[in-house]
Amino acid sequence: MKFHFPFTDRQALMVRHPARILHIGTGTKTGKSMGLYCWLIQGLLKGEACVFTGPWFFRSKRAFDEVKNLLAPFIRSRQVRINEGRLQVTAVGGGYLDFTSADNPNAAFGSNYHRCVLDEASRCPREIYAAALTTISATNGKLRLAFNLELGSKNWAIANLLRVQRLSPEERARTGEDFLTFPSGGDGLVAPDLIALMRSQMPLPLPLWEALYLGKIPDSDCSLFRNLDKIFTGTELEGPVFGRQYILAADVARKKDWSVLTIIDDRGHICACDRFHQISWSLQVERAKLLYETFHCTRAICDGTGVGDVVVEKFEEAGMNTESFIFTVPSRRLLIEELVMACDNSEITLPGTEKFKFYREELESMEYQLDGGSIKYAVPAGSHDDALFSLALATHAYRASRGWILGLLDLLKRKAQQIVEGVRDAYGELVYKPEPKVVQVRPETIAKPVVLGNFAIWLKTQKAPPCPLCKSTATTYNELRKIRCNQCQAIDGVPLPKPVGACCGNFLPQMVSGFIRCGNCGQQFGQGAVTVGVSRRDYAAGVGRHRSYGRFG
Image (cartoon, rainbow, N blue to C red; front, top):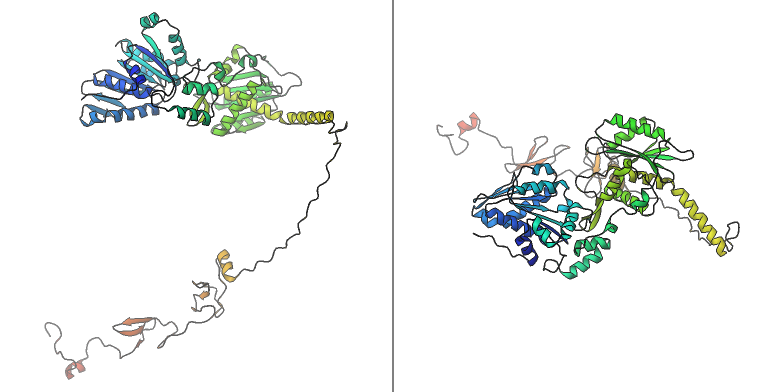
């Protein structure tokens, strides 16, 4: 049994390309992943060792499921076996196909493969590329890197593609590297009218859309934070400047991430910072308090999400005026967009010294990521964003503190313009005041008292009025909304009529052997009472037709 797949021209080019290392940077939805699945399956059936590496586990699990669907006839014929626990496919010829993720690049060292695929390579950490090269060095195998181009030329995978693109054909043949790049559409997978429709519906910047669908590598203008050269021109301070007010912003962490403290003044200048990790919460609070008191900060703003709520309480116990900021998906997005606007308008400055270098690194690493039809902001896998959010909190607090000042200045500018235009006089009063409008006063409506019936009262209080006959409060309502007494059985004070032949006040008629008997007192009506058995006198007189009783009578 042979494996066949209807490749498109582009997929056939990827599968049959002779290069040892092939960089495949394309637009979205070009079929590159499916083509590389088939390339790995071909190696599996030839008895080769193959591996698929995705940026995270769930991407590799999805690829594992799709490969199983492609190999369904081989699985039924038992030429291929599936190991769900290890995410491994083995063939009877000795070949095997592993599915791994790039979350831990060190796990790739020590393996040997003939065919290796790095899917969504631009979203994998940079270290996975060196690890993948070691897996094919002993076998003289082949490596395929597939990715989209929307992350820009600063991404390591796209930078490698540009590097290979600049090589001459002789240099590519000598190094064994080559590249492929093509846009979406043109191969029958995505219709051109659908691409045009997506341009009008998706809220994407033009360079980002061109990278996703036209296969164009965006330049630096596509980065999220621009104008960084003008922003990193500030001055670092050792202490406060007289007449300035300062705010402390804190993004805290305990083990894996970093805790970053940022000091911003009332003019938007970042003048001091502190960065640390893997220290106790109490020591973090002491370091924050020291920085807070050094610059005589008026208040602090801290991440209060999750365990940060406890840190906010510790800040307040240490004597710091602390504001808690809760991170949610909408608030996180708005906080980043507020920082983007501040950078575009040069509202803040940071020192360009080596101590503040990590701020710029995190600002440059923040990127657009598509989440369905919307855009979200995130850093690549393995990167940190703690300094970025500490800076965003500081910017948010700074912009909020000067909000009333900007509003007052805007009001004064608007009044000055109206004075020049003659709308107001020199004292700021309107020259032509509008005539007062006549306001019609509607007559006050007097609410009519609401009369509630007994049943309406019962619906609210679940308590019926007492019985009019016996005055008992053990009452309720029947299906006709009438008061029924559970004591005397009266309905709206009217007792129930006694049936004919009633013997007592609680006559319960029962049918026994064709006669009516009261179930309360036992009195029987109709014919004479029925006697069970026979007396000796009746027996001697021969009462009844039968003289014998039972078998031995």
